[in-house]
Image (cartoon, rainbow, N blue to C red; front, side):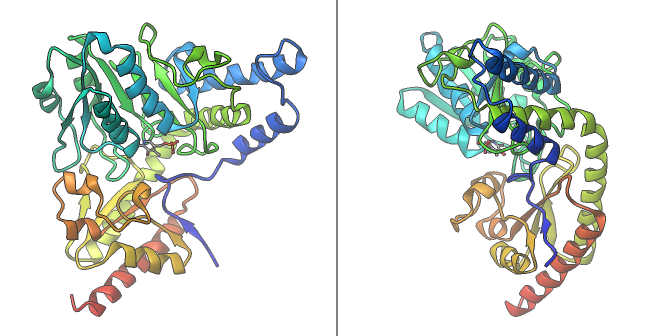
Length: 383
Ligand SMILES: *Cc1c(COP(=O)(O)O)cnc(C)c1O
């Protein structure tokens, strides 16, 4: 059976060029980058190149990139590590209401540790406005965390505006850029960002590896203690094959980013038009303009998202409902509720996320099947 993957916001297939590099550094250049002999040096060379490749994609210095076990750990270190390190300067932290659980739950943990946490609301498009952040600032605020692109509805925040507001006051700004990295241009020389979370497996690299960008001069408390790798931010022998694959994936994205954003954006617009013109009572979630090219979050009234997911799964098509991270639970997505959808509307929402592997033909085929399934489900439920 033909299979069509439309869930690139959950994870992506590893690009074969990255997979080849991973293999090479597992089998041939397997040394420990800390070793002083030729095996170590060989590993270290590849390792350093990977750091440069990741840095280049956000225009940072390589020394500002700290490899982690993924986006989740980067988010955790940014919030917990920064707040703990700067506790003597203030005890107030602001996060947005529509963050990924890796930030949301790290903020909950900060509360347990005695910090004050404010949660800034998003507008109906899932966008966070600098004015809303400004209202929550206190003289004790030390850190603000607002994601770059929302993983459910794809809305792109204006980090420049939020960041300038904070920079004037000396408050650190963290952004979870896991969904935008490699897909939307990011330049830390232009953007007033201090900490930024990145992940490999959302950009066609292997899983279990990511990075935290820490602007020179900013400091966090490390999360593990031992061999002082990654400048003690994360001790432990580095996941060299993973990091190599991450670096290769970043290199490929740097070459493809412009072209890919255009082709994927055009495909998304086409399927969006197909679905919204052929089905009535559907609504696109997220910002009409400032939205990730590959994201399509669609509320189809009278159609249970889970039923749609299962019907498409039988046909070999992978989509998601609400957030990938809450799969298995039947609770409506907290993000969709936070931007004003009713429980029923949240349950009627599906997310298609397009990527490098999708052809126009596959997409149109999936679109026809979604329309057919929606009509069938609607008539079955007497809609
Ligand atoms: C996937 C994702 C994460 C988690 O990254 P992992 O590498 O899977 O730990 C964090 N934030 C956002 C926005 C994500 O989409």
